Length: 164
Length: 448
Image (cartoon, rainbow over all chains, first blue to last red; front, side):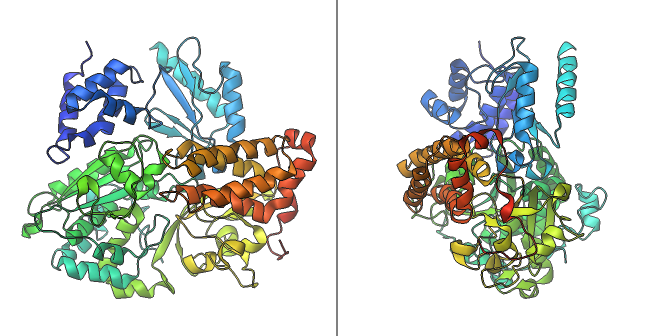
């Protein structure tokens, strides 16, 4: 059965109190973030239905929001999602090279996941780190001033982390 | 003169104690002894203009806020910073969270908002922790919460994360998103000042705008208004990026010349790797790109300065806009066609899909540009692009349509021969990843 951990459920309930009574739907996006964190990095239909039940809204209200926002994954992703920015300022700073390097190194195309389930490459639109380009988002944080060597080191670091 | 980043490098400034020691929360103390009406008046006098991109006078926006009896009002801060080239609000929130929170409390008091929200882009996933830490510290020290400093004013601030949608930087889309919906902009009127979030009167302001309220109250609106040039008062945060030797966030005076900003030692220190300046988008990806000659000098041959009026001198024919302050610099090796293609891809990805000119037009422009960039374009495609952008501009509910059309229009206007070069040299344009360098001549004005 799909259910938040005690801690996340309490967090979700606290978030709901931030909005006026009867406007609990406002908590939808923050709670979808919690759900994606807890249930494997993507939003399966039963997960979205569960979120709908917490907020007492219709499941369709959750689906239409979840599919609108780029950060919500509608299908399974790897343990680590490499979101490399490809918009103008990053492009002129060499993001194409970084993306090609990751494709070659991991043997995957944009949007694909490696066979071992570790890495997904997700080219991203501007992430607000233009002065520190090229860059990628990795989970909660940014990795900036990327070079192919740095990318190699990040991949090694993540492979090691996955083993532990 | 620095009004916002003066203390950015003070050790521990992210935390309450250091911020307070540098004079933090004095503006709030002062503000709470004034009336909300007096505060709005001070902001009006300051001449502060919205720092998110549109440059609308903040005090005027505040004075539009409806105050029906018994209906709560809200301040919502737009921290959805997503305009390519722009990363200044991130800097403010990350390094000076208390300055921002102090500005929010003062503004909440001025507007009568007892519950205010920060709508922050979801990708800035580590910043809510920083802001929530500052909010907790402000609360623990009596600057936030119930009955602040015994004035009877209650205020709560909540950080609300988005989830990746450029369109949510548009204020009505942001409001829809805050209500837990898709970020589809609303048709105005009604304006948010009358019916905003949950149909309550709402003011939506940019992060930098709200932070600027602190120095305004500290020095008084009139004094603040004396700083700057003409209707560009105070200072502006610029986020400089692209092929610069020293990209980053800078607080600039409005009388700084564009040339000094790019080449000055105190600022960006010139173009990286000894290259020449080719072009620049001075105010975020939506504003017109300018070739080096028109960037540094106006069409009349006058020095161009980093302020609202000077950057827009010449209109869209020969000028651009200060916009959000996202300053994107391209060196002589960069291809304007390719750069414009990435921007077109961005707008295609970010169109909410409500209005057909934008939904269909952005994708169409991207596909045409991709063809040209890859040596598969025809001369007619350049006319086609012009035609598509012209039919998007002004024909959509929100300004995303314009924002998508302008970069394409300006690229063709100023770099037409680079588009033609791609059409005429299909094989070379597939292998060569750089454009025509003849626009690059930073110090001598050549005609476009």
